[in-house]
Length: 117
Image 1 (cartoon, rainbow, N blue to C red):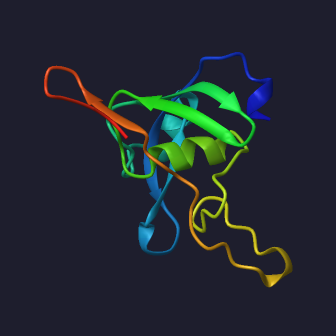
Image 2: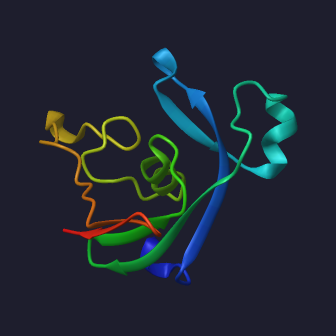
């Protein structure tokens, strides 16, 4: 599905705690805000931009982060990260993934740090 998006593709949302123990978060779109009446919904929007899609590798940039932001946004788009038990784990044939296939390749905080792995 991601390979059909016009890149770069930007998704913006607010977030709200969700699920057992309120561990996970769910994106909340602007038009849904009234539905939640400020119940634990973040006050600011968070943006994830899908920059590149090549085979099974996706490059995502964020300007400021919220817990599980990339995982929640990709799952919301219908493309959960392989092995993600919280946002996309699917128990096919009772085989459990060995771990989430999420890797950070670089971190950049302008004026503070520039680091590529």
